[in-house]
Structures are given as structure tokens and as C-alpha cells.
Image (cartoon, rainbow, N blue to C red):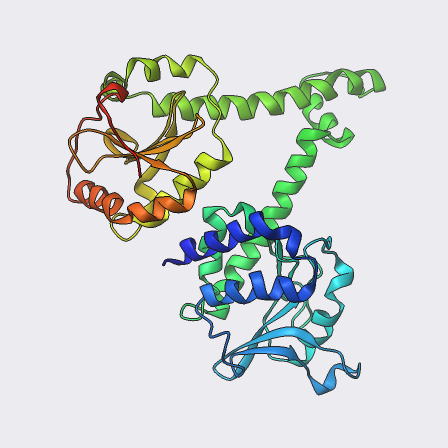
Length: 367
């Protein structure tokens, strides 16, 4: 299994069994150890994954960190675990903070099994930063996060490379947070700056009250316009549109809602075919009646269709002349179709194209 597949298996466990992870030990067993096993660490080797790690110079007798990871005989990562109900905060960094300064560790991880905080020493050498450079929810894992986590795998671990990414992640995430805050509640200074070039004269309370809702509305419209531009670009190829079933051609005029289940199904398919075709060539294009997964954003290259907008779920496959719908009960069953999905991906990787048959031309298979 690839790293992405392993992590998504753990993510599903978090979603399904979080109610049973009310203690640190349950979080360690169900999530933390499998998480580092997915990154290729030998969790059964106490010289590599050290439980209940202690360091003599900490200054608090008997204090321990839950785990330390060793690479080339040096402690490189410290891990502190909390119950899944814990809201992670600066106060939980105390042990990691002390151990970081007296070991060779370059990274520290604080987790409750669902949320992971990754810290390092960007602000002051050998002193753990209060603010994490990477935060993610394991139950809602994005591709960009998986790419960052791959750098922490045993075989790819490189301190300098991770630190470069850490610097970028820390400050871009902080900037994004500030921008989100401005969108939700534009500050007076920001409104003053915007209004200054539009409204001559003094910036009075009346001007502020007039422009604040306008700035907030403008932010929303910028986002909406950007999304609309992306959608329009995706539908720009008239040949592709002609290949769509009639119900799909009209769908852009109706509301299309991509569900979390469809997103996860797409990610599973993308992970499966990664060995056969570059992942960035695998595109999701949602429609009213199904969620399409295509190659190169081209409807002549259908890889799969997720028919999840109904009580009985199907995945449409294209390794034969017509779309073949295979009934699935859970998303995990998509992995049972690995060989067929990869066969289709290889066909496109070698330059093939095929016309996607309409829904009426599909074949249903019950498994």
C-alpha cells in the first residue's frame, strides 16, 4: 500500500472509532503507532521508536515524553499524545519544550489522534516554537498534507528540506488565517486603506459603516468569481461538452454539491492509480448525476465515475467498451478494483483515448 492508502485507512479508523479513543493509550495504539508505521518506522524496534522516552538533563525527575524517533542513532522527532477529546494548546507543549532543548530533536509532534501539530525551532535555535508550522486533521486529510508528511518518512527524512518547507508552511498558514479574518470581519484599518482611494475626504464613522459591508461583500464576490472562472475554464472545450450526456450538459445551470464521500472516493482512486499515471493528471469533475474522475481534464479519458447520489452506490469503470457499474457498500471496496483502475490509467498513460458512453449504455454489475 502507498503512504496515502495507509494514512486514509487510519483516517477511517479515526472517523469510525473516535468514541473509543478516550485515553492516551488508546490513541497511541489505534492511531499514533500505525501513523509512524505508515511512514516506514519500525514501531517494534525500541532503538528506533522509543516509548516513554526520558532525558537526564530535563530537570523534572520522572517526566517522560510518549515517544522519540531515532534516525542514525540521533533523536530527531519527539511525540506527545493526548486523549482524542483534548483541545491541543500551548500548555500541552511543556514536556516537549523541555526535551527539545536537551536532545538532538529537530521536530516535535503534539497530537490527540485526530489533530496533529508539528513544531520546530524556526524562531530561535534549539528552542521549540510555540506556534506549529503544520496543523492537520487526520480524519479530513488533504493531498497537500500527505505530500508534506512524506518528507517525514524514514527513507526520505531530510532535516534541511523539511525546515525549508516548515518556514513556508508556518508563515503562509498565518497569512491565510489573517486573510480569512479580514474576509469575515474587515478591520477598520483595512477598510480605511480600501476606502482611501475611493472616498475623498476624512474617514468618518459614517464612511466606515458604509464601506465595511461593501468590503466584506467584495471579498465574497472575488472568491465566487474565481470559482466561476475555474468552472468556465473546465467547460471551455466544446468537443468535451458534446461528449457529455444531455443531463450533464445542463448540469452547470443547476447546483452541484460535491460530498465528502465523493471527495474521499476520488482520493482513493487517485492513490490507487498513482503507480500507473502521474497523480496530477487525475482530475475530479463533479456533475449533477455523478462525480466524474478523468485524466488530463479531458472527457475522452474517463477513469471512473462515482454514482453516490443514491441509496445504492456504484463506481463506474472504463476498462471495457462501455461504462460498467460495480456496486459497492463501502469506500474500502474501491481497493478491490485496483487492477482494473490501473489498467485504464495505463491505457491513458500510453496515449489512448475513448468515448465515454452515456449512462444508458452502461452495464451494471452487482458484487
